[in-house]
Amino acid sequence: MASIARKFIFNFLCLLLFLGLYSSQQQNTLVQRQELKDGDELVSADGKFRLGFFNLTGNNSCLGIWYDGDSLTNVVWVANPNAPLFGNSVSLSIDDYGSLKISYSKMGPTISLNPGQEASNCSAVLLDTGNFVLHELNSDGTVKRELWQSFDYPTDTLLPGMKLGFNKKSGQTWSLKSWRSDVVPDTGAFTFGMNVYSIPGNEFNIMQHEDEYWTGGFSQDEGYQHKPINGFTLQDQRGSSYAFSKIRNENETYFNFSANKDIKTFPRLRIDYLGKLYVGERLFVQCYFVDTDGYEFHADDNLTHVDCEDKCLSICSCVAFEPSKEDGTGCKVWTTMPNFETALNARKVYFLEYKVDVEHVLRT
Image 1 (cartoon, rainbow, N blue to C red):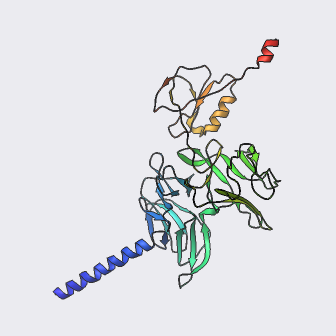
Image 2: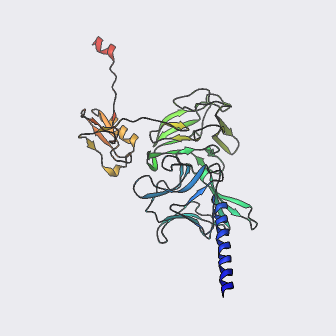
């Protein structure tokens, strides 16, 4: 009996050792019928990227990819920005039919990231580029075909190697969509992409909802920006920290960029909720105020920061505005100059500036 017990313990320890080794070797990979739950993470082989569930406001969970470190500030991709799941009973899995699914509990709703495809023997891997790729595998473990990749569905961030443009053959479009605010990943007011009928120096546009907000692009046809145009501040030139390229062939027209390995900040091109473009990291200082009375628009209007600014500009007597919610959305405006007191933790208020035509005033 003792020998049987020793043999059982030995086999059990071997199994634990095997599972531990398997886990450490497969930490960048999700295999079929395996669950990635809230608190679990996939980590790219080089340790630069992480994939898991995060929440920025309340208890709403999103699946995302972020640079190693704080998930709240380093998010580069969100799987379900407009359909967050409430609570922490969430998981990511690959079902028996090869569908990559986000689920909320066993009986709750599911979100399929690759609907309409069926495959067997599948796995999804988080690559060192930050791309999350679902593969169908051959019996020997080699890749049979690629079923889906996160790089085809960018949110607000373009990473080195991602495409910004369109595929004329498949109809695929790659564009960046701003968040509603700094902490709300829902689709916001701005979309950054390539003009379908572009000319050199006018390859890109930013759309604010249905209106063209900005146009710009490269100043040289060979694909590198010589100087900033219309505020497009890609700062580094060919052979420097960043290299920007424009590719055109019979099937695709797109822009991408690469980053030198010695850059110290995380390389990314991002459009923020105000419609501004940034490469790498940005630092900013905010001033805060405590507000008095003002008019607040209805919460169901789902107004972004830019929508609130537009509301203020459409009112002749508006002198100031602010996002009225803690997550940076909503809208409150003032038509008379209010009295404010400074406070560290109050929301930021934006004042309109008016310029007086001195020459005209003197003539009249």
